[in-house]
Image (cartoon, rainbow, N blue to C red):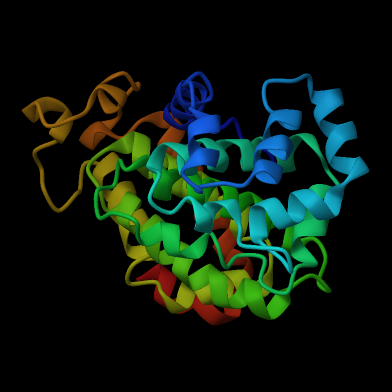
Length: 276
């Protein structure tokens, strides 16, 4: 199922795309290689059809750029100390798998398709840090692609999902409905298979319970009767949403209900506990 991407995430990605990156300086400093820069420039700020043709003509090179290979590290690993480069590459990586349908399956053929990305989820404890936010967006897209083909990296996917769920749960526990909506939409993208739903339920203290709290807040029965919307604690993103009780926007409410509906497909496993 397709949902409109969260407004805050789109704004963040557009902002990063517009930033100038001193690529030549990064090459001189040894942060990236000449070959890395050549591949980046060939697909950066070009038309989608040109981007697709370039990647499809040398898929192995772009898989190595993002994931590493026999000839070197992933650009995300080699640029570990350059937050600006990592942010830019995370946005570009998301653009590439969206614009080049064949790239996602090619990445999943790598023996460790999630390895360079998973450590970035714990880059910071600040829920608004762009690096883990952008990483979760990319991983949600890639794992969602993996779930459409049971032969693609199933063991790696099952190991990556709990780590991604754990990060997304920190967003649903925040008081910012914009961050909550990012997490819930990514949950929906991930809850496509029986195994994904079982892993989600296994972590229900962190994954399901915050969703129930959001529903309680929307119904006016939250744990804290004082909405951050009215107490002045809401962010700009939260305040601009049409709110229900507890400052819960209609869009967020819909996405939470959608995720719970997806989870309900495992009725035998979760039925009685979910009713509680």
